[in-house]
Image (cartoon, each protein chain N blue to C red):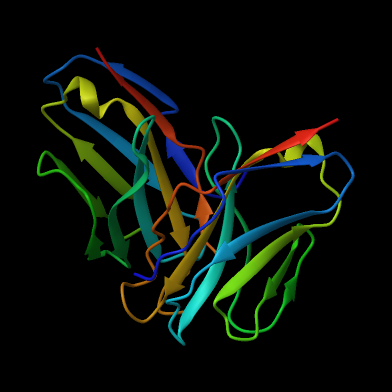
Length: 114
Length: 112
């Protein structure tokens, strides 16, 4: 157990639907990052939150959105799903605040869009 | 973000040391060198990180060149469980809030 909890572990849904992925960061960590990993794209950074505020955006589609709540857990919302959104979605956390700590990743959510 | 260059793949024998190289010739003075690994069907796992001095932890050692333009991750005795993709990443905590930008990494195979 890395300390970062992601739910659900697996998700199968149809095209056009909307899903929500959840991430609980390691205790004490304020920064949360979301990554997408598909077979042909490798690990792609999507978005980062620090203590409830969005700090950086990567290759995140407009159909995707995220937020970090006061208890520091984060949710990634994926809407109007397409077949190409099928991928592993990872959440990572770190203490944040410009402190040079390592990052802890969750075990991911495997999303399959059919 | 400064880029890193790693070999696509490496092979090692079980119980032998493994040296995984990484070149980062455009590294800036405030970039930290991070290493992560990803086993099949798992999330990336933090291995080690450093700034200027060599670092050791229970998993590995990190040797950083004096000019910081290259580094080497050292696994002292490879086991079959060390077979994974290893990523060398530069992280600037002050600039982009420390985002990890993954490249293709080095796929390490360990032979029994």
